[in-house]
Length: 172
Image (cartoon, rainbow, N blue to C red; front, side):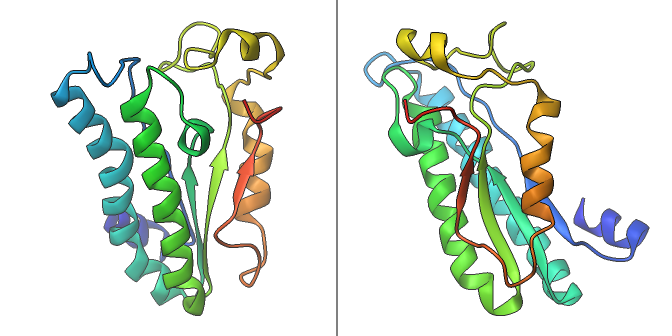
């Protein structure tokens, strides 16, 4: 992916890490294979993507990495253990990468979109929210997340890094 981007466009400026899977399951009743796969996709996949992109971003002299996190990675949720743990790990990876890459003017920040109706969500985008939050949370469509992503992508090279930007209405 990185090689094709560099060859086609002459370099790499922005990387958005947006892979994610997760199914509701308690720790007690969880399938260890599904737990492992969730960590592999959501955390290790982000690691591999960032690792592959860093040389091209450094060669460019600056850049941005935007990880797609989750409120569940900051607060957890009963029945969403693998997903919440993988997104908590992604948040830590975001912060560590920001520290490692700041000298190279590469900012690394997390975007928390909150519930978004997509092929991975239930029909109203609130699968992992508690019943009380379903009534008050802003359920977005993918285009409603774009303005925050564009804001993050257009910050100056010495701008914010190791930050979490959220579109959640509240800390549920």
